Length: 309
Image (cartoon, rainbow, N blue to C red; front, top):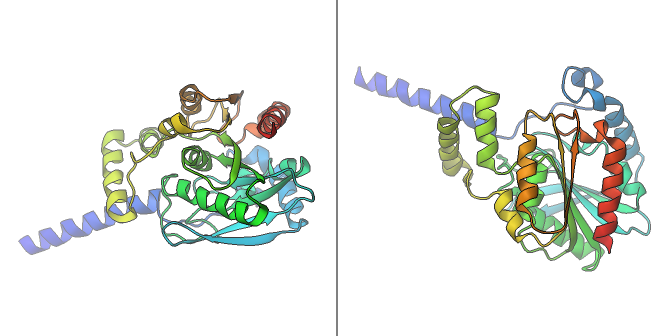
């Protein structure tokens, strides 16, 4: 009897462990978010026309597939979209279980028209990039340094580079801003990033999953240490920004329920360097561009001009 009780307990622990990892960090299928039918009942509904416009535009551009090897041996994929006589290159990093055609639907053509090459980086455990686990920016931040080194080796050490991210991608580039880069990084654009993996897990556990936040964070943190090789409290944007030498443009929607706007406000206050912030009225997660397109584009152009000086 004792044997069967122990076996059932072990099986229950194994199932709970798998479900937690599957829910939070395991590679997951990303639906075809270019489908209006799929988007119409999500917060991305206002972006349907822009996503379609961006998809068509990208399909018509000259493109190259780039591949790099991560610090821990993963083959990462990126798409390079050249611009004749480019003034610099934007490196894009998308969000958690998302994709570039969603998160940068408003940015790709805009930046390209301003004279920038695009390097669209698929995060580990997403798309054509290898990886079993995503890590909320902890390991991804080191991937950024690999991409800047690759861009510098192909485009020249003096070629201007700008890092841009949305959601987890924003956290990724903010945490990467404190790391040394061989490329000529000039600035960081962070749209709706969170302050740390621990903070966002705690928030989602409480507000979205209705779980005890401290217990849920502790348990997931234990699992990520055991199976994924990282800690939820390993790094944060607030700490990284203490050592960021680049100008930073912070963006967030005031009605964001997934990543609270207060997290970007905290990041902004923590950073003592050259900075700008745009908080979009009425915008939810990752859709500030739609709600304040004119203000977004004007602020970006000011920021890019500042980075080029």
